[in-house]
Length: 416
Ligand code: FIX
Ligand code: ZN
Image (tube, rainbow, N blue to C red; front, side, top):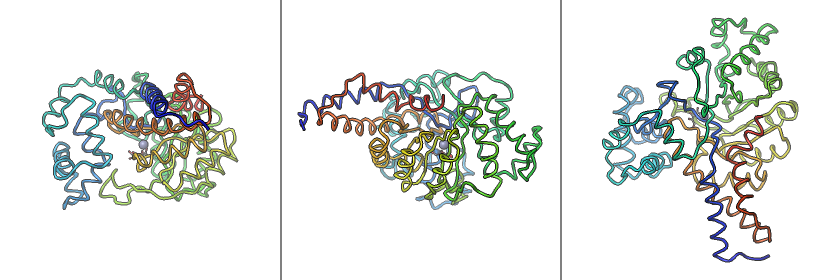
């Protein structure tokens, strides 16, 4: 074993860091939209500050009811969050640090701590130009949205056949169909689909029609759903039947993956709204069952619980129709990204998509990727240094090839 010299190690780390920081990213799961979607696209400092991650952290300090907080104007909510988390104590948390990274990368003077001066900066932005600037700063070439046909603000935009900026790909989100079937039935009927509460043959046909209609209308890359830790499959329920009779047949027929985001407990604290969801450990057997029994279907999977990460990697070693992605939500923190990415590379090699941003505010692309790139670069460099110590010297081109796979290539190969 030839130990690398300090200089050789530093040089290799620089090569990896350059490759990681210069490779354009396809961000496979976000909640942002192009400007053509109007107010659905959130951006600017007040949206950054009222991100539900920061609402949750602020409400730990405030002696105020949730209803009182939500009754405040967005600007006042932002003022309160800035005062509580950034001024009255150090903004140590990952979500707080993220706001500062964005301001700093935009060239604003973070040391002034002047929220008003930051607001003046954003007030002067033109949203179309700002989208270009953010994509540029984040090193992102395209994003995959979260598109919900049950969302009354979003559906009319798709029905109006507006042209969609080609950097924004669609994903058909079907939580409304699978997790709230009883509420979905009257709406689907309203839209001309002959469905019943009981998922009978007629319902199966028309739900399949609903899915293919919207996959085509959105030119969606995949179908996606978030699922609770208690999710079981097969499951004797409308959800179980809709998945086996509608979602999976359509996924196989159209070649689109079924993305499952598993482990969220919705509204553990309803008063906190989006900030009120929590996590639970889920069953890996469900994923193994789906991959084994539907070999022609493709599954994109991310799990919310830290305790599920190792077994998810092992399940992926068994099934090539399972693609693991992202350090989702409560896992999107430096210490956990480091742990999970290291484990995935050691168990799955480069056949994974290590991260997605889950950006809900456009500007978040800047910090989510700056923070994740730094950690992925460190972890990857350690791997190449281990190889070099055994005499295997990866070239810069090979490292750039590998990084391109991690930052979108694997996803596009899996989707196509
Ligand atoms: O289900 C999801 O797509 C989650 O990512 C969101 O619902 C969640 O609120 C979020 O923003 C996580 O980062
Ligand atoms: Zn999300």
